[in-house]
Length: 189
Image 1: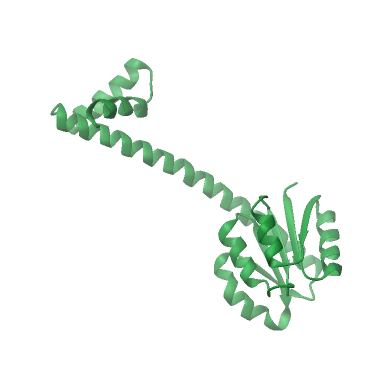
Image 2: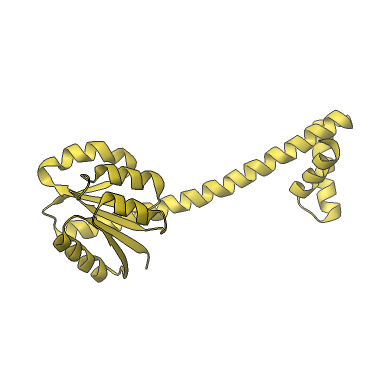
């Protein structure tokens, strides 16, 4: 299963959360006692789930959750006392951090873990789709630049340039991108 990071200033709480995550199927757990230690760990490993039990030894923890949300694709759960949970939620909810108030109920934590996993899975799917679309957009830009070069230097119309690239791709059994690159290498410096 995916990796999980537990950040807690309390050793007892860390053990309880670790036992819960083990029963949930997380076997690859890492722990940190401070925000600075967690930041160092985050740079070397990609975590699927990060649970931060506030307060930490060197900071409260909401700053760490925002940092993690901005720099990872991990699902983040922030545990804090019930009397300040709403105030902390106002600070971190825009970053996609889930707040669970303490004392926590195992069922609620279980539901939040499921929610975080589902949203992370959806987010990763959207990231993949976005990457694929960016590749297509870059390819379209390249082809359009090649069309412009044909129109400028060979006085083709746009439909003629389009047809030329399509025909060259079919005749040479290459992609339109490869044809566009050849055209650009001929006409652009």
